[in-house]
Image (tube, rainbow, N blue to C red; front, side, top):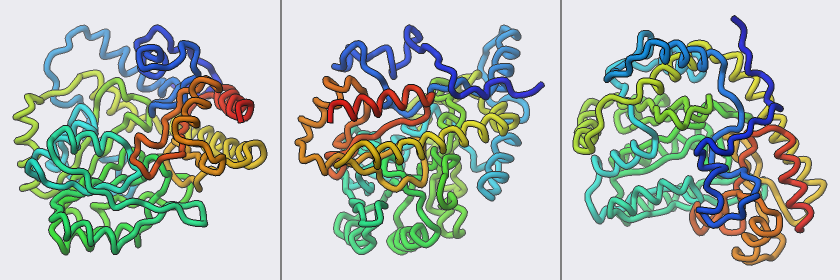
Length: 391
């Protein structure tokens, strides 16, 4: 049976399904009729092979405790080997309800209250959230936007922050959300060598690993054996195949001591087996979803190119950061000279758009907006036209 869900222009009404992207606008202070391009899920139907696998499992009718469905590890490991040249071993695998949950487990497992945890802002805002919620201190090795339109790491400051704050734990975002960087081998090795030198444990969030449009995704733990010994690698099919609502992540920890400490925190949290439908969907996606994935990637790449051209031709004073990875485009509105509040008002109440305001990613994101381009082109074009109209 061939893949059926390859029409990415198809518009699907998600209202009334309980999705946070569309059904909770008023509850979150947005106009009811706002156009949503914020939270990182797609507006595309997932692979028909995933749908078929879920239907088949649904027909079985019994949904008891499930550790793994048949072929699960083979499907996951096969994807990692084919797409990322990474050979994973089954003992390394820890399944969690999500990557943010895994971040929280790592904070609790590898640090103590009052410790600093290092991140690189502007960065995915739950990084700072799980640190603060667990009574740790956010320490930022802030990224800087260069003349080349790309963000860069200050490696001297990175080491300085480690030593000054006695850092035990670093959250790496690779590819980086929201600035769109796909870190090079050289950049990752400079970070990795410093972390090994100072005995810093690394949690590498690689949930966007399958969305690379420039360069090549480097699995951090796969670069050197000594990196693998200090790293918790977070992956999931949720971004790649639009399965976020099924709460399924695959965390790889090759170091047995780190893995046992992580598992102990999961026991404390009362988490054991996961949602059976998430397991079924993950296995089917990695086993049979290649055609869908390739079609989706072509469509999203075209959307990214469309945004870049539109911004350059129609939005003077706005710049798009050079985009290498993720389906989340980072727009720089600072050239307009607006305050953060004024920019938010224009976007939300004049353009009637729900984007992600840059300040939520750290003070370094002030004056930026993150735009989710994994949607039908018609919606993306309408959103950009709305921005043009209010500017």
